[in-house]
Image (tube, rainbow, N blue to C red; front, side, top):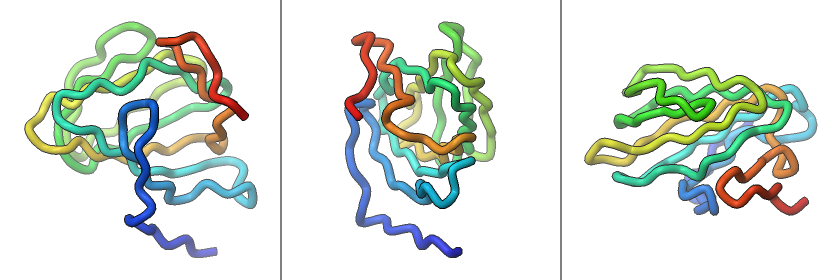
Amino acid sequence: MIYKTNKTKEFFTPERCHIIEILNDEVAPNMSIAQARVEPGVYTQLHALQGIDESYYILQGKGEIEIGHKSFGIVKTGDVVFIPKDKSQRIKNIGDEDLIFLCICVKRFTEKCYLDLENDTLLPN
């Protein structure tokens, strides 16, 4: 199957970033892909994905990544970040332009796997 990216479908999330769903379909249950956009100076919400490994592929900008409550340093265009399942995570845009990256989840992301660690809650189903 071919999935076309529709950039007009970008939406803002409580995680403090803008998301475009690229591939998130129960037909492909083993993975999902989204594009995230974080504005300059913004930290995404501290969270974990229960049972899901996630990788970020940085398309544009510069950020500081935190995994498991530890800073892992600066990421920039072309870098890949691997975040093991169940680990806390967040990223801060430390540049002057939008930070844009792909979020590649293995297994497929669903809202029920998202654990908000700032408010200690799961997203509603």
